[in-house]
Image (cartoon, rainbow, N blue to C red; front, side, top):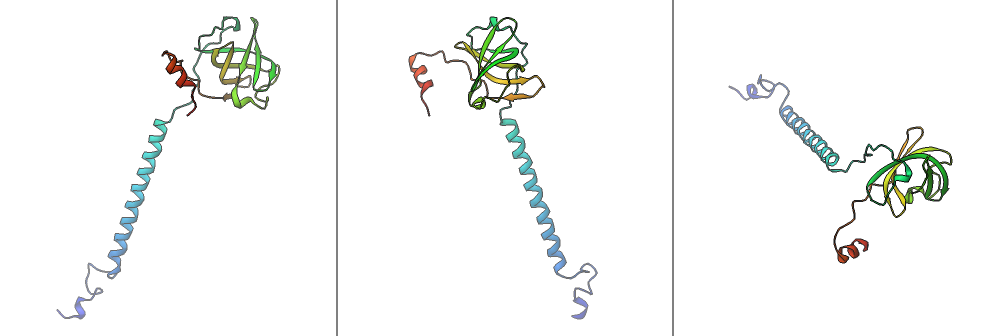
Length: 166
């Protein structure tokens, strides 16, 4: 066999020259790297979705306002907005009226309108409903905050720690 017969053009298994093998390896490496990154991104997105708390409204039947008691349990009331005071408003049903506290979400006083029919869900404590969700007459739902957990049942030390700011 002569030197001329050993050129890449003369070998049948090497039709495109010596660089063709490197290009094929580079393409395989690029595709593999992309696949690994895509799988990692999909796995990370799935993990975030599974570990993130979901915002869901508990399906509670509305109760009449006069039945509200300071129990810190989640309740839903339904009525019409009677008055608005900044981040608070009054809901009135056939049995009575309740003061609703919306927190910072209602600071501008434009969360609801006087006369609007609403359903409000939250925790009733200290004489007013700490709203977590407001469902408007058109079905639009405003999530104001996640409802707080139950009060600690510990002694004075636990109560003092609960009121400390981090």
